[in-house]
Length: 141
Image 1 (tube, rainbow, N blue to C red):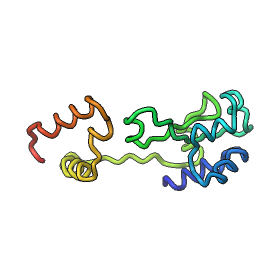
Image 2 (cartoon, rainbow, N blue to C red):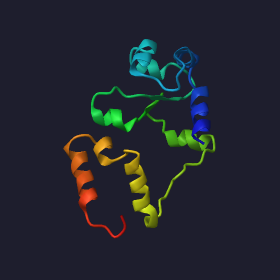
Image 3 (cartoon, helix red, strand yellow):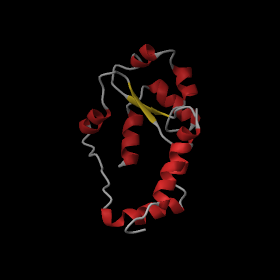
């Protein structure tokens, strides 16, 4: 489903934007790439008569952003919602519900992969959340 959504988003880009990604060999934009394409949001909104969304990598301004490996989405108009694009193309949203019986098993596997509060939220907030979870008594650990 994610690959299909990515292909759908890439197809609806204005040609100038698709060419930029093709030249870079990427699937998402960096701020530098966007700055080379448009001067401001008004120019961005006018790039195409068709509505479109892009995904871009935020600048790595702090350790939290770096560790979360996130993307931002931006629409070609303030009124557009990503949910509308999904609905228009009959793409179902996917929710993964982890049963409470296996919560600690999943947490342990994430810990083994070094996906913890300490990594996702660098600084005292993440460290204190991790310590609280690590040293709190639980029924199943």
